[in-house]
Image (cartoon, rainbow, N blue to C red; front, side, top):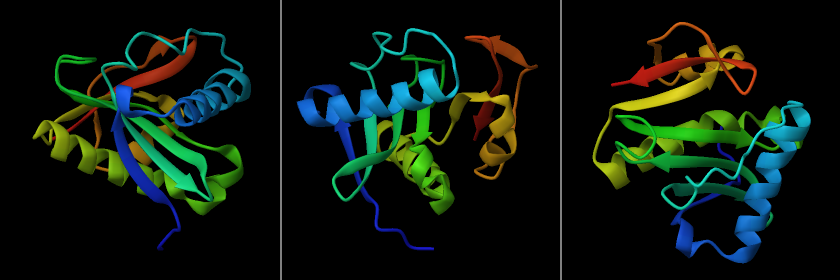
Length: 150
């Protein structure tokens, strides 16, 4: 399925104020309000991350942070993977993960990626080549599992 999403990857300092506002708003809508989880989303890691942004009609509808080895985990990693609720029926999460994996490979020259996945999304990440490498643990009171892709 081909989408009408436009993808861009930017370093933190390259983000416009409008892009930063929209991506923080999207993260807040999903990770704090929708998931009813009070936690510090702005965590000092945004400045280290490469930001993958998917837009549709000038609105950020998909987003992920990409990290080099050692910036989050020992391996390169992907985090804050999110698609706006009103667009999830489009299955853009799969396209987002494909773009995130490509971004890690291109920016950081590695195929080994570690993620901290919400447990209910384990099968989704497995469909992108990730394998569970930990027991279930709580992160911000939400069950997570560490997964790796080689």
